[in-house]
Length: 156
Length: 111
Image (cartoon, rainbow over all chains, first blue to last red; front, side, top):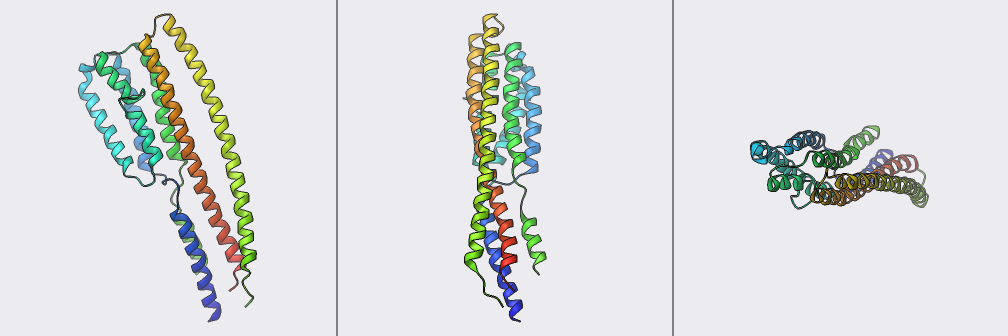
């Protein structure tokens, strides 16, 4: 009886410690849909940017559809827990006041069309920005519920 | 039932946690330094190329300014990515400590 009580107490102490430490995660966990969304938007963005050598007015519908997807992705990122860093990165990428994707689309609208060499040079910069977001996501830790469950099953 | 030696348990956990932290952050510091060096090297090449392209008329001054400013934005994004990777390293460290607690607690807390 005493041995059983001691075993339960040990399990409880260790479990409470684990749960407290896990609750203090510094950054959110890996999200497969967020990662897939980032890659998908990167491909769409680079395809759209290729069209910027043409008139902006000729691609308004495609641009609006893309911006809608981008806004949806940003909204999703806004509501992920402990995602302040990721959100800031998205904000820089999509801001019309900066000089990456949002800034490029804004400039395309103002100038009407953009130079072929400029597009060739800015594309890799925007690709790099997307890659930074995707790579950070891919490095995040998967949920650690398995660790807790493994401990519980060993200590029944 | 033998007495629980909490001082022993705590000291073992503390030593293990400190060891893990030192390893984790030494690796992070080295990675961050390497990333920063590579980033600066790439930016130097780009700026050099863009300067040539402006000189030969392939880029306008406005194009050049936009591209240079894109690098400032990328530097910020790289810094944010580094901060994110450090946060992940901290969480990995915490998970490592969890494994240590489980192993040490299971071994040293008698039943």
